[in-house]
Length: 417
Image 1 (cartoon, one colour):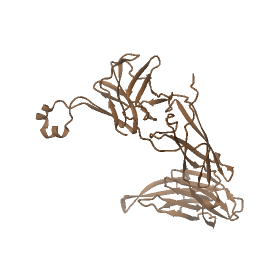
Image 2 (cartoon, rainbow, N blue to C red):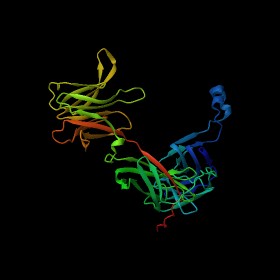
Image 3 (cartoon, rainbow, N blue to C red):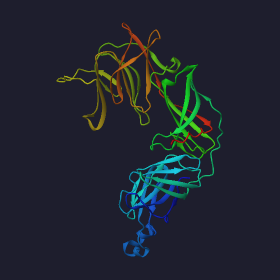
C-alpha cells in the first residue's frame, strides 16, 4: 500500500481568494511527495558520457522531494502567481457517511517555479475509490474530485463483540464500558468525529482507575490507527489501551523485589544494596544507603571525602567527568553528593526505571521524600518513625500494560450546526 501515488498533471488551475491560482497536483500514500519534471534522469549514462556528450540526452529533469516522518496519506497542491498561496487554508476530505478527515499542513517545497503544499492526514481514506477534497479558506471553498490511488480492498478479519468487554492483565481487570462519538472541537484533530473510550479498572472489586494513566488508540481493518478515531464506515474497530501504574499505585508486597532488612548507616557510612556495572548492552544502576556526610562515587564505589577547601555552598548532587592523569583520553564519571541526614541514593541510567518502596522491620510501608535530584541521580529521605534503626528497600520495574478490544464503531454524533 505504501508508495501508492497518483500524479495529476492535467488538473485545471483555480483562482485563489487572495491572488494567484492553485491546482491539485498529487495524491498518495507514501513516505514522501516526489515531483519530477519532463525528461529522463539517466544518471549513470550521463556520468559515463561526461558533460560534453551527455547533452544529447536533453536536460536533466527538475526534481523536488517533500519527506514525511512516516508513511502518510497526502494531498499535494501547486500554487503560482503571487498572492498568499494556501496561507490560512484547511484541507478536508469528505466521506460519504458524513465523516470529514482533516489534513495538517507544514510540508512545503518548490517545483518548476510553483509552491508545493502537501497536507497529510492522520486517518487515511483507504476505503474510498474516489475522494472529495475540499480546500477551505475564510471566504471561499474550492472543491476537487479525484480517484484514490491508495484504495484497498483487503481488510483485517476482525470480529466485533458487544460491550462491555473485560480483559485480565496481570492483577488488573480492565473493562471497556462504552465508546461514544462526538463532534471535534477544532481543526487540530484528525477527524470531524472523534471517539472517547470509557473504562473501569479494578483489582479484586476495588476501583484503581485513579492510580493508573492510560490512553486509547482506535484502529480500523484497513490500517488506520489514531488517538482521535478511525473510519466510521468500517464494520469493526480495534480499541487498544496502553497504560502505566502511577507512583501511588498500591503495589502488593508480592510484586515488589525486597532487598533485605539492614541497619541504617551513621555519619560517613554507606551500604550498597544494588550495583549493576554498566556494559555495552546495559546501563549503570546503584542503590545505596548513605549516612550524613559528603561522598564521592566512582565506578560504583562510595567514599566519604572532606568538603573541598574554599567551598561555601555545597551542592547536594554534582556529576562530572574527570580525566585520569595517566590516560588523558579516558574520561571517568564522578558523582559528588552531600546529605545532612540518612538518605537513599539512587543512580539509574536505564531508560525504563523502577519505583522504590520502603518498609520497617515490622513490615509497615513508609514513604520516601526526595531531597535532591540531578539527571539520573536522586537522594531521598526515609520517612520512618523516630528511633527506627533498620529498614528494607524494595523496587519494582515500572512497565506499561496493554490490551485490546474489538467493537462495533459507535454511532456518529449529531452533526453540529
